Image (cartoon, rainbow over all chains, first blue to last red; front, side):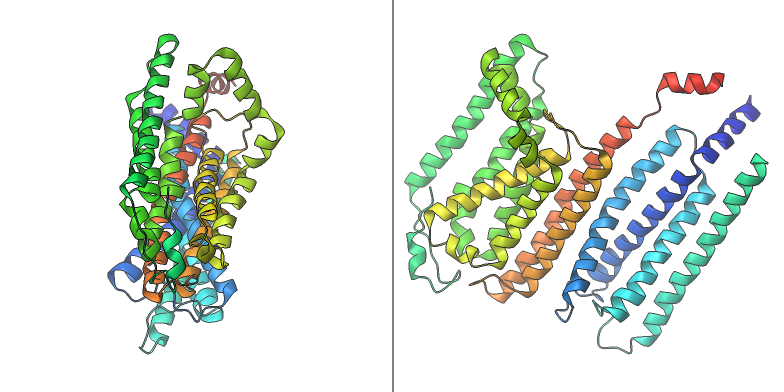
Length: 162
Length: 275
C-alpha cells in the first residue's frame, strides 16, 4: 500500500517538477523582497523610502520589481497548495527554486539596483564596501546551492525515467 | 456637495480653508442613507425568488458606502483640502477600499435579480455591449485608473480641482469609477460577461501595482502643486503601503480564483489511474 502511494507521489512530482521549481523561484523572490522591506526598511532603517538621487529608470525598475515580488509571494503560496493537493510536492526542488529565485533577486538588487542604477544603498554614511561584498556573496552562494539542488533533483527524475 | 469657493483665497493647499455647512452634510448623508436602504430593499426583493442574500454582502455594501462617503462628505472631506496626507487617506478609501468592498457586495447581481425582467435584460445587454467590453478590459481599466492618478498628481489638475466645483466632482467620480471598474476587471466576484485569462490579468495587475507604487514615490520626491514637502512625503508613503495592503487582497483573490479553477478534476484522475 505504502509503496504504491509513494510511487504515485514520485510520478506526480516528476509530472509537476517544473511547477515545484517555479513555486520555489517565485517564493524566493518574494521572500527576499519581504526581508528587504521589513528588516532593512522598517526594523533597521538602513534603507530609505526613496533617496531622491535616483534615475527615473531606476524608480520604474524598483516599482516593477516590488509589484512582481508582491504578486509572486502570494501566487507561489497558492502554487504550493496546488502541489500539495496533487500530492506532487518536491521539497528539495522547491528549496532549490527558493535559493535560486532569492539569490537572483538579491544579486540583481545588489549589482544592478545598488551599483549600476544607484537606486539606493544598503546603508548610508558608512563605508559601504563590506556591506556590498557580504550582500552579493550571500546572493552568489544562494544561487550556487540553488542550482546544485535543482540539477540534482533533475538528474534523479531523468534516471528514474530511464 | 462641496463648498469650494473658499479655495480662491488660499495660496496653496495649506492656505485653503473650506466653509462646511451642515446642509451639505445633511444632503450627502441622505444620499448615502438612501443608497444603503435601496440595497436592503433590493436584497429583500431578491430573497423572494432566489437564495437568501448573504449577510456579508450587506456588510460589504454598508462598509463600502462608508469608505466612499467619508472622503466625499464626512470629516475627511473637510480636512482633505488643507492636508495632503488626509487627502491621500481619502483617496485610498474612495478609489481602492470602497470599490473593493462594493465589488464584494455584488451590486450588479443584485440589480439583475431585483428589477423587472425587461429592465434586467436591458442592463445585461448594456453590460455585454462593445463599449462596456472595452472599458472593462483589464488593460483599459488599469490605464484609466492608474493613468488618471498620474494625470491628477503630476499636472496642474490637482490644483485646478480645488478651484472648480465641477472639476472637483468629475475627478472624485473618476477616482471612484475607475477604481471600481479596475477592481471588477481583475477579480470576478460579480457578473462579468467578458472574462480574460488569469495570466493576462496577473500581468496587468503587476504593471498596475508598479504604476501605483512608482507614482507614490514620485509624489514623495515631487510634491503636487501647492503641497508642502512634509505632507507629500507622508502622503506618498501612505499611498505606497496603503496601496500594498489593498492590492494584497486583490492579488490573493485573483490567485485563489486560479487555485479553484485549476483543481484536479476527479474524472481526469480516474482516467489517469486507468491509464
